[in-house]
Amino acid sequence: MKEEWVSMREAAARLKAEGFKISPNKVSRLANRGKIQAIDDPLDERVRLVELNELRTLFGSSLRNPGSSVDDDDDDDET
Image 1 (cartoon, rainbow, N blue to C red):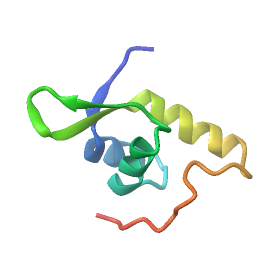
Image 2 (image 1 turned 90 degrees about the horizontal axis):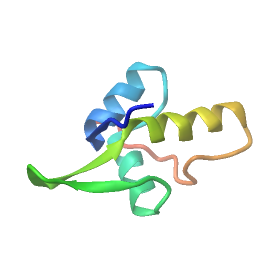
Image 3 (image 1 turned 60 degrees about the horizontal axis):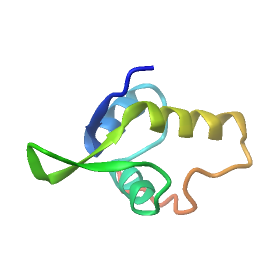
């Protein structure tokens, strides 16, 4: 599968459109906790990029294993 690096906001928007319950804040928390990889955007130092397929895999596995939690803190601030 080809890597697709997008901003955290873009990743959350795309996954939300696919039916996943996720916000940019949750993506940021996952990156800060080391659960997903994030890199600085070379074109904009204020933005971090995440690999979209890694998030799909992470959230897809949590759907297949209902008892597992992707993130312990589910108080998403929807944006």
